[in-house]
Length: 467
Image (cartoon, rainbow, N blue to C red; front, side, top):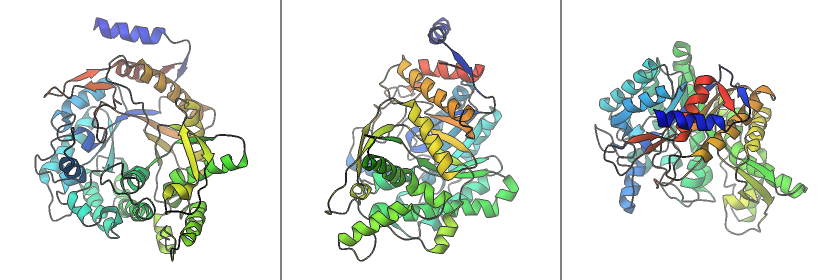
């Protein structure tokens, strides 16, 4: 206790000023099933694409145990309670509920597990924010085509409806799909995430076309069948970064706008305004024609599809981590590529919390959402407990968040830090995001609070941010 008190006094003593945090602004923490649960083949769980691909690749690390939260969920709730959080964002493992992804194989043990987790959170006074899909697709659904299968929305809708039936009375905030941009760009386009596909010129866009219809299906099911009973909210988790132009030239300013539309607008525009961003429609169609294609590589929505997807939001769920410097980088017609379609390049702008505020203003002005919930934000560090670099990052970003609320009058309802604890970061245990350290060489997966954990606990307890 003495060491903890010393750390807290050191952190508080280094501050020079303070500002009040609105009492109605939620603060929370997040994890995801595959990254934290473990128990990959226990209690009736089916195989996910991450299970299959990582095992087949014989990687040095895997997600078989990770943080072992499937067994240690009560300890996780105790830590969340001690941290004074308002909410906890977690995902439900699709193959733990439906081992082959379809309703013909419902796993009651999986359903019961999440009932226990949700009830435990509620009893602790913590609001559950539930992500329906956070990348761990059942292997059978992938074998049927995954996000390239036009029938994917049928399977996803069945799964979402089952979750609403089971947990609808207890869950007020739902998130359909986590980071469509990462799924379609990094997993189906650039080959950086499972299933490691390199369909950068065409499959990347087919993925987005299928995914948006699946999101809309899950939203419409809740809106039409459950909203009147439970009055919950449903959103799509959209990831976005902020970009500053490399110069004050028109070409670099235009490049910045293209990047924002090809990342943020790619998924926000159909949901909040209807249809793809016009700049995507025009550029991809023009380049496709010059490349010799009979039609655009970007699938075109019918008017019925536009109307079905448009308006499928109750709030704007935002994941954001980085800031970049953007410059014009138009390429001649060669092989079809998302990157050539964008016609811009960018480099990291490191620590720039002002970019967070600018991004929030851009979203608020462009899409005019009912409210904004920050569903992920955080900093990678090394494996150490004295993570004062994370504290400095959080101090700057939360300060910018408060500026956006108080000075810019943006309706931001919550901030969610990634993550509660160190976890499996999609191929590595070296990228440490957690407020709590996990010892991955300890069979018990011992948890130890970092400096940032005590700092976060204090600002939530006092509702005062030291700046």
